[in-house]
Amino acid sequence: MATRNRRTHVLNRLKSIDGHLRGVIRMVEDDAYCIDVIQQLQAVQGAVGRVASVLLEDHLQTCVTHVIQGNDSDERTRVIGELLRLFDAGARTTSDELSTVADVTTPFGEVGGPLQLAPAVPEASHAARVPR
Ligand SMILES: [Cu+2]
Image (cartoon, rainbow, N blue to C red):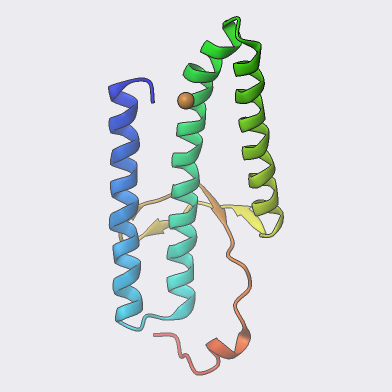
C-alpha cells in the first residue's frame, strides 16, 4: 500500500461495501424476494472486485515496479510468480461463473460497474416464493 490517500480510498470503499452487505443481511432477515437478494449480492461482488483491482494496480505501480527496476533476480522471480498465481486463481474463478457488464443502482447507494452473475440457484428454492 503506497500512499495514505490510496489507503483511505480503499478503506472507504470497503466500508461502503460493508454497509451494503449489512443491507443484504437485513433483506434476508426480512425474507426479501430471492432475486432481489441475489441482485444485491452481485452488486457487492462487483464492488469487491473493483477494490481488488485498485489494490492490484497500486501493487503493480509500487512494489512490482520497485522490484522490476532493482537488481534482485530472485525477488523478481518471486513477485512474477505471485502475479501468475493470482492470475491463475482469478481465471479459475471467472470461468466458473457467467459474467456480464451492467450498472446497478441499489437501495443502499451507487454500486455500478461490472457485475458477475452468481452460479445458478436450484429452481426448487424459488418455488414457494412470490414476488412482492
Ligand atoms: Cu504491493
